Image (spheres, rainbow over the protein chains, first blue to last red):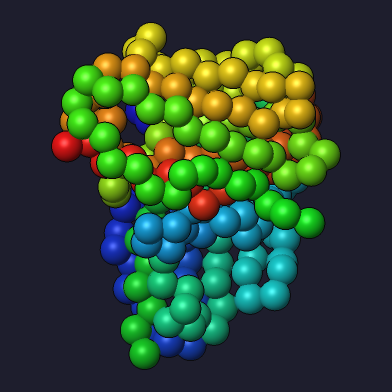
Length: 111
Length: 115
């Protein structure tokens, strides 16, 4: 089992719809969770961080964390074509250990 | 404030050569991490440095080495380049990796092509 797993996609949604991206992790002691967006040929850009169970909202983005089930998700409301990118989930196990990265989910928002 | 800066942006080398990539972290950040990203995959961890000391090393051969300078900038060196080293090399900085809630911020990367 990979430490951080994401569906590779592509996930295709129409413009204006809600895009739902999921990430599961294997290390139960993981403490911090990050979502990055990466456009083709560009570097990852931090869009959300979440540390405690529940929802965290920032504009059109909502991160959801469920430590008991070991998953973290990212919802994008009112999806725009400019949201088309690869979304990377990164998990910090704590204890000075390095970030663990998923392979990313490709999202395509169709006009 | 300037973000993470990397140089060069693009580099073309041939097999067997060596390369040095450079990174300057965000002002005030003391930790630098290096990643290799090949097309279609997530970043693969190479090294992490904090206060000029190596804090972590990924599963890369000894051809890969790095160091961090007193001003917290960093260099990644790769010797005896192979075709498989062709990738986007990313540098990320954070304030202190001891705190797990510290996100990493990436530079624009160096695109390395091996011919």
